[in-house]
Amino acid sequence: MTDSNRTDFTNPSTFILVGIPGLEGAHVWISIPFSAMFVLVILGNFTILFIVKRESRLHEPMYYFLCMLAVTDLVLCTSTVPKMLSIFWFSSREIDFSACLTQLYFVHSFSAIESGIYVAMGLDRYVAICQPLRHSTILTNRVVAMIGLAVVLRAGILALPYPFLVRLWSYCRTNIIPHTHCEHMAVAKLSCSDIRISSYYGLFALIFRIGLDIFFISMSYTQILRAIFSLPTKDARLKTFGTCSSHLCVVLAFYIPTLFASFTTRFGHNLPIHFHVLIANMYLLVPPMLNPIIYGVRTKQIRDRLLNLFLHEGSKDFSWRSGSQTQLCAGLARDKVLGPLP
Image (cartoon, rainbow, N blue to C red; front, side, top):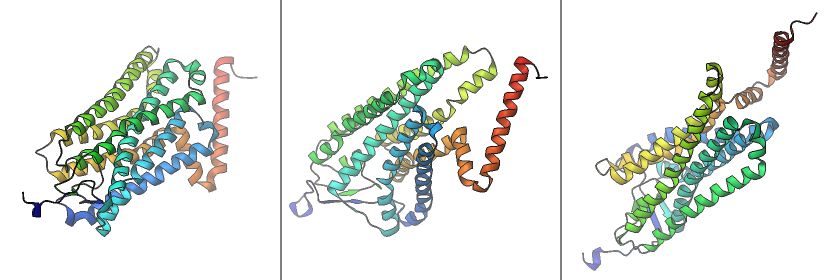
């Protein structure tokens, strides 16, 4: 290669984000479902935060972890989707080198935080089912805060080498990133240096983060299932397992696309590049969109509070009916144990 055809991009001032390579003509149409999902992410997660803050009955470890998850999802999406939509709508493809490294760090660190929160929520379900009488003494507010801090520190430390490695490499090929956002390997592959360290560290971080987290969640549910199967009746087993269903749903919604995106990036060399980019975007958008929906639909306390918020004109009637049903159930239970009053 002659010097006239070679451009040195060592620490380039800007990168160019292509968007979805090969589908540039359909960017406007692709932006419709993406922007709809982004709106759902914003509305759903802010609704969860608002409900938990307003409802004192929800000031428990499970809902504290749910709030941490909502904040994480909001940061993860707002760090990537606005730039993505600006590419789709306005062809605003340039991103400053430092902004690219910041976005890269946010994507990897908050993905790790989300994974760690799922482990914490699994721990909460384990204590609630296997040690129900000690739940409030084991998972105190102090312990919940320490778990949250540990999750954030682990994620921040694991993601810290990514921007430093990217800044270390020389970019003598191009500064065009075939992606909608700055992702570690998508940027590292532009380098003309030997990037095996980046590749090895990315694989190590993936195994250390997701591998260990899946292992701990599996261990929690092994103990939970043992406790559930030891219950005397089928109804009790189903009811107890139902308290874990929301957590299981969000875990599957997160880890399935995450693992699929990670492995197709490293091993799916025969797949078209636009497929890789679409999968990477789904992994960033789908879990944050589904999490508040799953917990809103499957958690009675949140569902009832939502009904109370959106049906103001019937709130008094709702409260009256709830109170009447409570009194009726209490009376039936009393009669069953003590017999009917004279």
